Image (cartoon, rainbow, N blue to C red; front, side, top):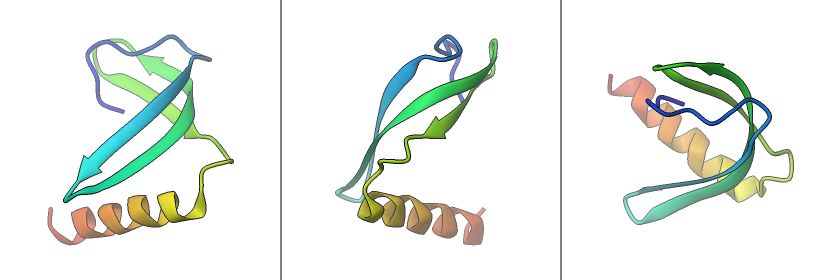
Length: 66
């Protein structure tokens, strides 16, 4: 996740992304930090399946339209 102020490693975070009136919400764990660049996150396995469908659709659209 690109951010200038990453959270500390092992921090549990809540993520909410909205695009075109659809919202992706989940919890995640910070697994690594790159100061000044961002952080790597691991999505919580309890993410609702329809939430992952939304994210997958958005990533597919981004890959087709660089």
